[in-house]
Length: 373
Image 1 (cartoon, rainbow, N blue to C red):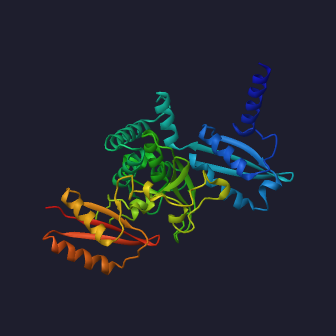
Image 2: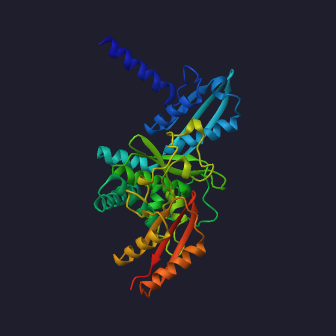
């Protein structure tokens, strides 16, 4: 009994350090540990927290650098403020924020209590539940369910064309950058894409999370994407880029280059601050876990002839699209076109078709699009 009471007392002491604006008793000497605790307390619905960082935790970083690292941790908030002040040799950090709708919706779903939700949030939850059920009903394995979630997010949401974007923390900003605006209005930013994939994925039973960091691939600023745990490995998923880089003639068609990628296939320099990364992403992509493997969105082919065979079989099955990946071969677009034209003519097929081809990770990714008769 005494041991249990001591454990409870220790837990209460820990809570007082970070929640409800209380002053931390002992400064953190490890910034990564502070980031892990901050994320945990945000996910536990604390809307204000205060803690201190020792000079060792700060490690010579400027206040601006500390603030930027914390932004990668606070993806559980839809809006927030970070206050930094000196406290002897330490840095005192105070954060205030309001919860991202997906976290509120998931808690309401888990508890069955929707009393804290707005009317729009209830509508959003109902849409997300229906989409999760759609994904489960059309798929068997967890990988197929995940790919189905990826597909419906790319199908139902478009990247916003609002210019200028709403100011930070305004009602318009919160709606646009969350699952509410994404699912009710059909448009959002990378933050909303990440939140919707997280929300529907959780409702569909996936081990998925949200990550915030640097986009990479030559893009500047900040970006949001997702992580998915498959067995012991963690991979990244980016429905925002997967939607934006799909078929330009049919925006609902996804680009599968950003589905379950390891470090080797991620856009160059895509990362979060090391202290703020949710999990260590697998160094290598397992093609069996991608949409060209067991997830069922396409096929990995050994050469262009096999890729065309697969595309033709998709047409015969009444499928408008065929996604193929040919690893280890960077095939020029002219070769893709010439070989495909010969094969299609040889089959006696008279129909309109198109293709998009990308050099990708030392291989070639092709999307065939058929206009079915």
